[in-house]
Image (cartoon, rainbow, N blue to C red; front, side, top):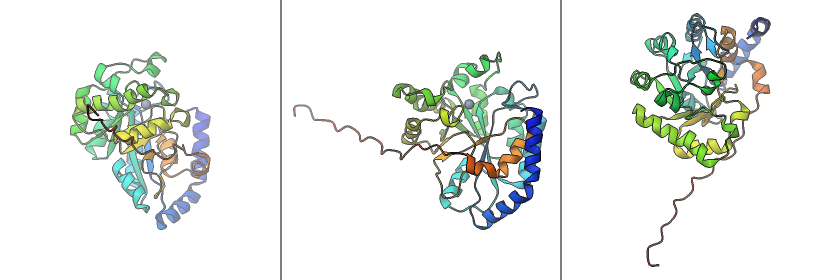
Length: 292
Ligand SMILES: [Zn+2]
């Protein structure tokens, strides 16, 4: 994030802080406090790209969040949405992609503090050691997590989530066979390899243009508990518990502060992705007895 933008966001955050504080207090008193889900990608000190956060910034983010919020799992986010009532400031932490370097500082810190965490990984990097295309395009060969690391995370209580096989832009994939492979088969492969149920799905990139109504329906039919986007937005009590909205907070700490305290601009600016009513699963074809 350019310095001028960071300064502007900082001025905006502190300038409207009293307004936010009162508004959030009122929403909490009414049980209408939205639930916040944050996304990180890569915690490293090399400032390699915009989705890398410095370990010191990350540790400060987590200290700040722990002092002010109840840190909860995606399952609890869903429970609170379904209850239609939430009176506590809550944040759920997720990671996308699955970079090995997260095992150095970020993941031990969260695990040690018993902070619930959902870790979304793409199957090809985990099972085949493939680098992400978006990294290769920028000349980066970041090592993905190994299967052994993912199994160990699962053993330590981290919820492992699915993030397709090859990290494509699903907004551009309309071939049903390819969609099934990226969403269903890739998840089954991951589940078999890790040996734990995979319950949550996250769209790669996750902006509006990268979502796909058919993919939502496939995810629901297969039995995912939820599908997560990444265009920002909050989860209102009483709202949709299947499509969980998340906000990316890679980089400067002011982003975490701004999103976690429910930036009032976002409520009006963010257009919800409409994936329509999920159709009923297709009935099994009725077999015709031989000879009839
Ligand atoms: Zn991703």
